Image (tube, rainbow, N blue to C red; front, side, top):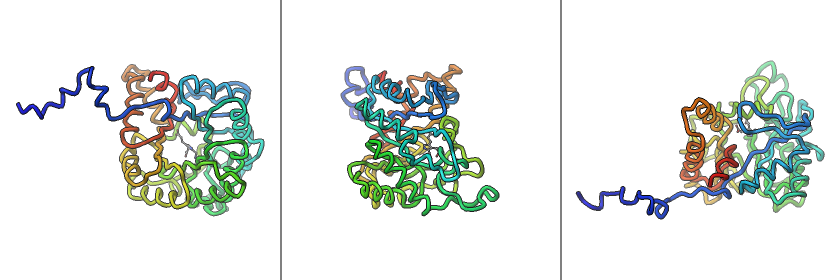
Length: 326
Ligand code: PBG
């Protein structure tokens, strides 16, 4: 046999590490943290085993737990004390994310990213201001341009509290530009924007919507999140966000969209992030609970494949567990 046709020679224990193309490290990972203004005690999230919503008083402790595993970056999600039609608690200076950010930045060296959206704060659970009568006619859309001003206010309130990076997730057209303008106007030109650039209308967000209490009360998010059938459209979304000043481009979800991760990697020189979402986490846990999969192994393999596809950063509920194994 022709000796050049023996790739197996490079699979012995000794040489495998030398020829490994992809290496996962704790510094690639971002851990989601849920801060809940409605509770005084940690609340387990049933569909996301091992994750909890923590009260404001536990936010620093929660972030320190993450940092102990070697993961230095967190993304904060807030559950406000009250919701209303416009989501006013989303940009309150004393809102849950703002207060948590302040404490975390005061007391730790964590890198704090905040999710910028309205769905956890609005009574209807949509990611923006609704058109009149939308509840009666759920095909009606959110008002894009009216939502932009609010996103700018939310991002700036997070930056005022000390956020290092803001991550708009509402799929509002023009959101990156509006947020950049608002941040710069408030003197926050050093705060970075990680755009949820290609965010699909995915059924894999189910457990998160329980966790953050952000499920739409009626209708769905089809008229603002992307159609799972579309790949070329992701390139268009990414180009628009780059034009508007995004610093990091995110693809979400991750595993079912690795083709998109790989093509965005080709398209831009910016760092690419992928969000290994709640459903991707929950399904591995469910199978492992039945004894059908080895959780540690499949979690590591999942993150490795996301990185191999081209992601520089991975947002994942496995951050702590995988980092602790590395
Ligand atoms: C808010 C937001 C969502 C997620 C992150 N930010 C929910 C959604 O769009 O429904 C989902 C994260 C996950 O499933 O882990 N817009």
